[in-house]
Image 1 (cartoon, rainbow, N blue to C red):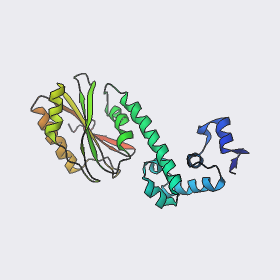
Image 2 (cartoon, rainbow, N blue to C red; image 1 turned 120 degrees about the horizontal axis):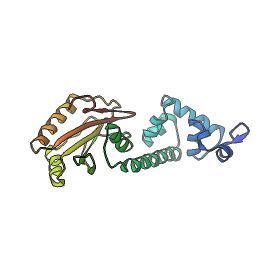
Image 3 (cartoon, helix red, strand yellow; image 1 turned 180 degrees about the vertical axis):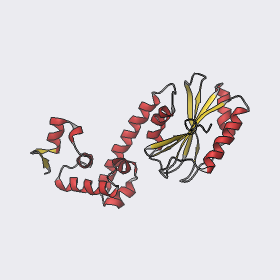
Length: 220
């Protein structure tokens, strides 16, 4: 049985809370074990991901098993705990009703998009006072791109009678820097919306731990 300061992990949780555990100790608890072997396995898992807990939590079950030799049940438990955290964060993000900056969009969509292995693009429809009226996925693609139908994005804005749109998509590669294709999509969508006096307020790219805002960079 693994002990620290004379206490088992569960005794330490009861006495000091989950916040007192190290990352590897917390992973061991999630895996359902509190042995020295489990903690050592969790340490090796973290080392395999460069010590980045977020990288562990964002990976798929199959790769977790291959990377550190975890059993299926252990990998499933880590993935389930990670998914639970993402869903809680997504629900908290959904409570945002008015957009004040690109950080609000990041808080809304990072839990939903950061861990995906494919690209998704979402459109957010806003009133003139930046209140969210609707948000919906407008495309889903592969690892390196997705196709956005500008007509459908603008059509929904016309149906809702809103004057502003924000689009947000993810980069599974991990870099939030826009590509030439991102630039082209942004300009085409801006032009399509402008034909109906609708403003493309921002285009935001989300990657793991970072984001890029066209508006914040003065590129809209």
